Length: 289
Image 1 (cartoon, helix red, strand yellow):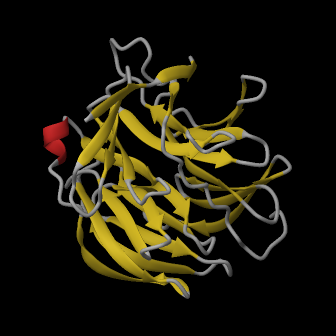
Image 2: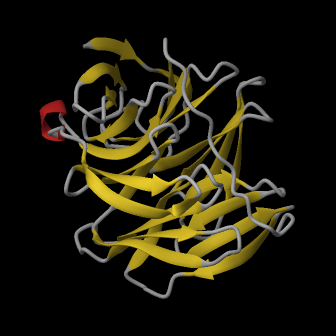
């Protein structure tokens, strides 16, 4: 197994850094601090970070093709455009909040929920389509987490952190909302010291999975479960990762703060030999809002 080491590029202290999105146009990384109620934007050209505070949890961010951002928040999905929040969909369950969210190859947003107690199996995975319709895809989840799509094989991967499972679904390339469960990645995450959190996929179809509790991101072959590379991070609670940079060979890694760990809660990156895949924007119909 190849061992790589991540370096810190932002020395702030996110309480729960998560949901990274690479903004190719601006060459910046967007990510959130869920428990800190903040959205961060790291400008890689200027090496500066802008921070926007909110009045509630903000759990994930994606760009909108028509302008602005789409945010998953504690109680719903919102557009953020010209300093204004617009509600699209509200959660009607007090015991849950949104967690990870990403767009599929068709530009539809997939968003997972989790119970505040982190134990109840009341979490769900829903898809928010281009017409702003909501459709439930998975239920009885504890912590719905990382997502990735293999466009060549038409496969969708989804992490459930508490059960330490990466489920595999086939999807219809003509309608990415149509998924069929076909199995799970054959890996015992406990062997690597943590549980699967956020993830992304590279151009070779290998998964890069952040391991909560292990201070690491591992590269996994989803067919065999073989781990070919491990990136060590000086923060035990490694939360998510995304590819970026001009050549998509930089892996950005978010983390959560932990008592006694000086660098925890920072933003990290690692240079890789392989090329990653781009973050996908939401293709909703409404302009801006």
